[in-house]
Image (cartoon, rainbow, N blue to C red; front, side, top):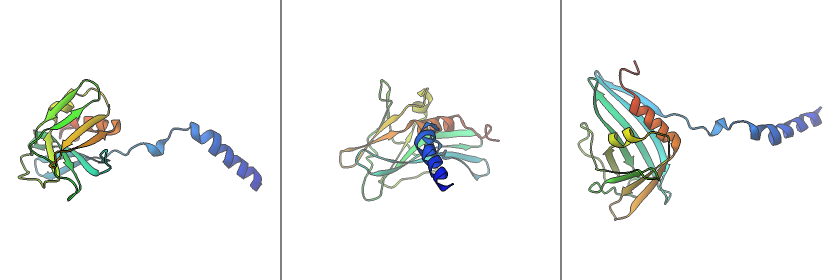
Length: 173
C-alpha cells in the first residue's frame, strides 16, 4: 500500500505537475481604491522592484479624483533612504525596448508640497495613454551622483497600470 502511494506521488511529481499551469507563479493584483475623504478617490498600484544594481524600489502608480475631476496620473519611485538620491532636476526616461521612448519631468500632485530626496514623482498620463499592450517597460531614474538607476517593469505590472488608467470613480461604483 505504501509502495503504491510512493509510486503515485513520484508519477504526479515527475509527469503531471510539470504539465499543469504554474498558478503559484502568477502575480497577485495590487490595485487599491481609497476614498480619502468625501468627494476624493485615489486609485493605486504598488510594486516592489529591484534595479540593475540590486537596490530595492517601491513603484507606486496612482491617480486621484476630486469631485469626479482627475487631478493627474503619477508614478512615484521610492528608493531606499541613504542609498539613493533622486535628481529631481532631470527627467525620467521610460522606454518600451523598441521604438517608443518618453522623457517625463518631475511633477508633484496638488496635495504633495515636497518629497524626500530618495523619492521621485512624475506625471505619466501621456505615456500610459500611448501604451497599447502589456509589454515590459524600462525606466531610467537620474540619481544625484550623476548615475542612473535602471528598472524593468514586468508585463503583469504594466497590465495593472493599464487597468488603473481605465478606472474612474463612476466605473467602480
